[in-house]
Length: 287
Image (cartoon, rainbow, N blue to C red; front, side, top):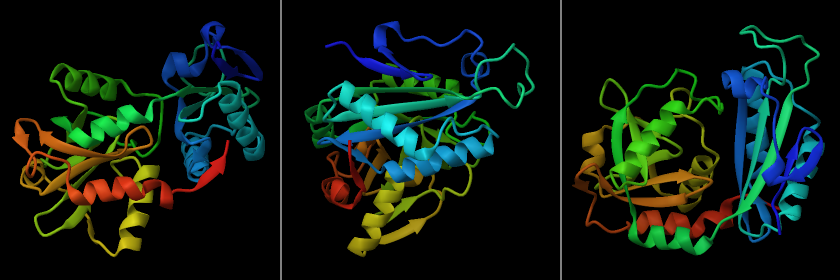
């Protein structure tokens, strides 16, 4: 069966899907996106993802392409048309198509909307989690508004490619003070030697991850010790455990940072318990 995409009002074969060459997402990275996990036929944390989408659009003065209810229905149609039971659904909204000019186009220019979905193999994620993954560190070189989930991801692309070439899963950005900000597509966490979970505050400087928020909910429910503060690369290297979070990875244990083994070199107990609990705390909506 061929994949199906939604592109500006039409369901089309994925292989034939296209956007205009003067779409501002293509010309200027003038747009935002969201990725939701599909788990056992359910959309994970849809409400929170749509809340963040609306916030990102407001921050860039881009209109919602349609009502939230209509967008939600199209998400489901794309998932169904692609027969996705476990996978991801991707939505992207740009400022639309207009003659190339740096300033905003006329106010009546309709935003452009693309939605795709694809299956993933849960077994692959479980296998990675059983072994744990490696991360490298790279200098922070992104713009200040990384709290907006824009499609302008070139620094992230370069960091992720550098990680792959080093045999790692992820790259952690490190600011001028030697503090970890976040990963190329994930939030960064450590568990200290006295069992305190630590992650950087999300008020600014990092993306307020949806999976990150679910983990915070799990920490509160479980009564675990938590400290929302920056942590250094050196502190990460000395940590008992480390992990990353995202819709595409859930809670993924980190067993190596650069050339340093974390803990005993195996996924940590706290990390794996949080991974196990994840779908019992997230919001699940029928697809």
